[in-house]
Amino acid sequence: MNSLKRLYNWTLDKANHKNAKWYLSLTSFAESSFFPIPPDILLIPMALASKTKAIFFAFICTFSSVLGGILGYAIGYYFYNTIGIYIVEFYHLENSFSIFENYYNEFGMLIVLGAGITPFPYKFITIASGVFGLNIFLFIFVSIIGRGFRFYLIAILLYFFGEKIKLIIDRYFNVLTIVFFILLVGSVFIIRFL
Image 1: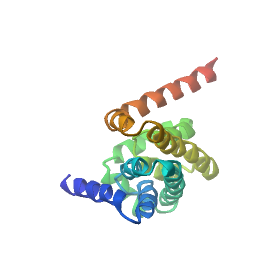
Image 2: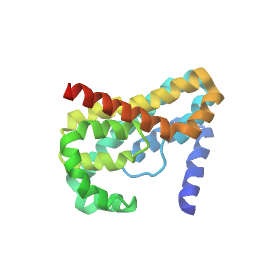
Image 3: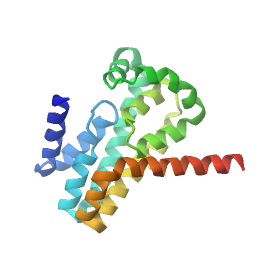
Image 4: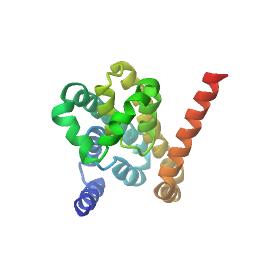
């Protein structure tokens, strides 16, 4: 856990670096397939420091994250037994993986969308999408929507509300995104069964 905290601090420190945009892109890309620190850690201070670039920073996060998601998909599709399994084991999600397949076959798109928006480890979903052979084009499309929603929402809130909203995001982000996703899934089920 100490090494994870050091990695977190290292990532956070890159928000003030002259090449912060590249670190943001790299973190967004890597987090979608193996890196444990979410790009929000960089996005929030960067958007606060330069509000006029907040939307551009959200674009960097979304674009890079989806590219990283495609790498995660490829790891699951082509290299699960050699690379993917180690990533899943690193996050102690190996037991969830076998249980997950049944849900994935029925609700694959909603699961990708939910992982894109919520704090659930997106890398797990990108690898699972490859393992279970989810349609790559649908995967990319839904990833753009999910990741875009998450990063653009943060950027827009920071643009309009600044430090005040940062405190709310820091404190309640996980709860708010989970509640939003439950409402989203609930509405899909209501529409489906009416």
